Image (cartoon, rainbow, N blue to C red; front, side, top):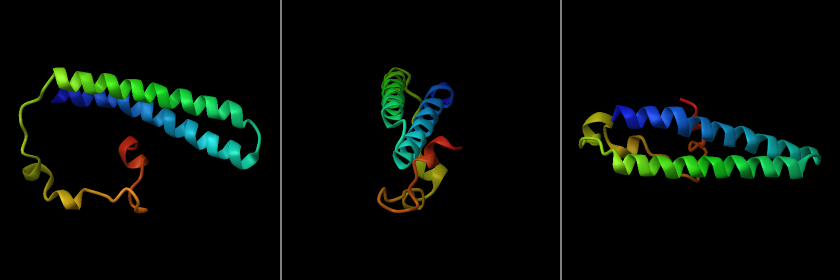
Length: 98
């Protein structure tokens, strides 16, 4: 399990952070009305890079299975840890800011 966690922390989190930064810059450019095209290209590039990293990560997880874990024993009831995507409590930054 540790190699999977290490890969997530070293590749996925930075890619998602880069996307979040580019997305924030794109929103700011839209609000300012300047540099929108450049910001759009940057956010699209960051999104593609994050998607590629996530795809490679999925392959890595598939080929490096970890021993079975009883998540209910580790994390408690699932409803305590889930957020409705449409709620204000759910945040993209919950995943990338740890």
